[in-house]
Amino acid sequence: MIDLIQHYKEKGQGQVFAHFDTLSEDAQASLIQQAEQIDLDEIAALTKTLIKGSGYKPSYSVDDLTPGSYHPLPEKKNGNPSLWKEAKAKGESALRAGRVAAFTVAGGQGTRLGYDGPKGTFPVTPVRGASLFEVFAEKIRASSRLFGKTIPWYIMTSVINHEATVSFFEENAYFGLEKERVHFFSQGTMPAVDADGKILLSDAGTIAVSPDGHGGALRGLYRSGATLQMEADGIDIISYFQVDNPLVRCIDPAFIGFHIIEKSQVSSKTVLKAYPEEKVGVFCEANGAPVVIEYSDLPERLAVEADDDGDLRFAAGSIAIHLFDREFVRVIGKGKDNSQQLPFHLAHKKIPHITHDGEQVEPSSPNGYKFEMFVFDALPFAERSVTIETARQDDFSPVKNATGVDSADSCRDDQLRQFARWLSAANEAIETDETGLPNFSFEISPLFADTETRFLRKWQALEEKPPITEGVILSNI
Ligand code: UTP
Figure 1 (cartoon, rainbow, N blue to C red):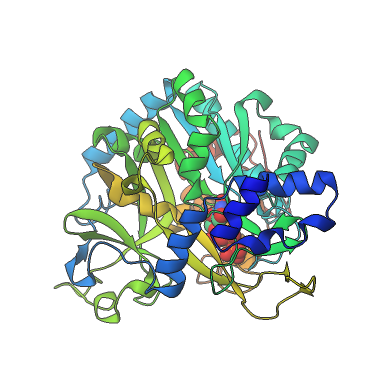
Figure 2 (cartoon, rainbow, N blue to C red):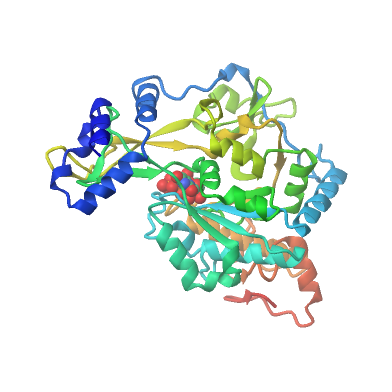
């Protein structure tokens, strides 16, 4: 204990123990335990490069960037329908063989949404108000039923929401999933620091920590033993999606098939950017290696550049839907040496803390820094990767904000538009506005159908078709 405190002092982080003598024995033990887990050399290096230095420096220059390549949708000009068909069949057989796990990252703080509780518990569907977690659970159940194999579900939580998340599943009887096949693990944390890289205390006996970013998923899967368990269960494909996107096809056979055909280690879905300034990362290549460039880092001249047909050149937007090869996750998650670590990025945030003098500070503007990893930074580590195009309307409508763009309202409307499209495909056109939005609410549960094709099959097989009116819910008929 003395050694540890001494070590902190020598590294210029003695303030962590400023209130140590005032703490109870238990509180002292808990602070020691937290302090033991922090790599002070890592914090010093991050402070030097990210806070004091010029920030995160990628190994390429923007002049090296070329647009990332991807497989266009089969119906597109350069699409290859027979390859998509082959991919779908390959994906389906992998699912029948039980090779795929679903994986949701749900450890974020969801500050923009401002909802009190884990984001996955947010009620998102138009009529039932089913939570994000319930929607995913139903999609996973639907796919398990279709392919005759239980698809296990891994959920990454964090210190801020682990217990509340597990309780939510308990209270809801795991939404009909086999409890033993739903696995939770809490992601790693990083200490928050001030502008001089000094570690902050949230109270006298607690280091201020925050989740280590969605990129923490890889080491989280490794450290929690999930990769080992997957190996034992014969799972080698991890279907990654984020907790805020209820439109996502959690399990997409064609995507899985492309991943298998290309022997890919990291596969991605892209939607084409709607306009040059759209705030999504863009798939690019830098000296032959795939990278995602954040929208803020893509120079305007590239963002607006058009090809001969007038289409954006750097158009392939990243929507945080990936497939990972289990062994790749194991190698990167283990992070044997620095060359295999995902880089950290800096976030300037408001961090409540206690000062050396015991004053509790509730900042009204950003006063410190958090360190986060981004999942797409795994891409350049992959020797083989593949990206496929998807239709935004079938895969992506995130709930990020309380109002406006990417909010609960916009997501609700996108769900309604999807349901209306499926009905229209079944010649059951309902009245919509010019954006395809019906003027009343109804709902199709993923247990009824989770894709248009499956909807058509199910709907056409119904002997008595229910009238689609306000408040109707098509559930597991
Ligand atoms: P966001 O980047 O949208 O962050 O996360 P957030 O924390 O949910 O929301 P804000 O920025 O505070 O408003 C995208 C996805 O990554 C997960 C989130 O739970 C969400 O599914 N995530 C993010 C983690 O699992 N861990 C993290 O440390 C950060």
